[in-house]
Image (cartoon, rainbow, N blue to C red; front, top):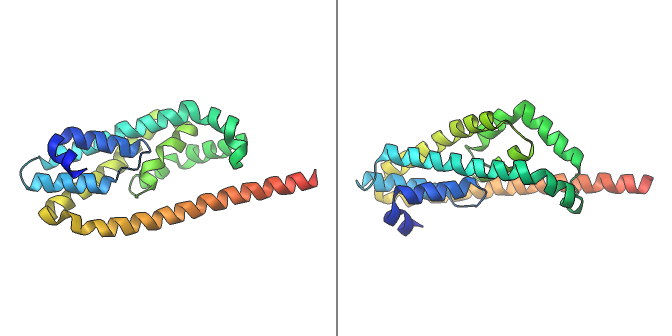
Length: 198
């Protein structure tokens, strides 16, 4: 990945950050830290690295939002029963995003793991395209800027901080994974009780 960024500069940062926000787990920490380090070495401009990384996040987020918006409901209606999801679950998600969508998108964009996958459920819940874009931008900009500044400050030692992000990512992934398992277990349990009572 570092070789790609070194060779193609801003284009590589744009593409990789787009993929990361389109639900493809590309580590934005590596991309932006290394981009910042390249800026410190005089190969790139720090402000441009931040802008390009943020634009990539916005593009990728809109791609994932669009897939969720146009395919998510049909997918859940058709295959949801196999993973204990019902149309009512979509209605609850839509209600949640109508009340808390802005803060959910904003804060999720500031966290590893969640930032990669929040756009799809926002699309499934039909969150407003404009609001989604605004809060994605507001959350992506400080994330991209902080990582790029950190890489710029550390210069050749930028990868020394990756262990911290890996640990934080693993912890958040574990929490999210447990929450998903609990959600599906509760749905399975409810269906089982309904089945026994009918």
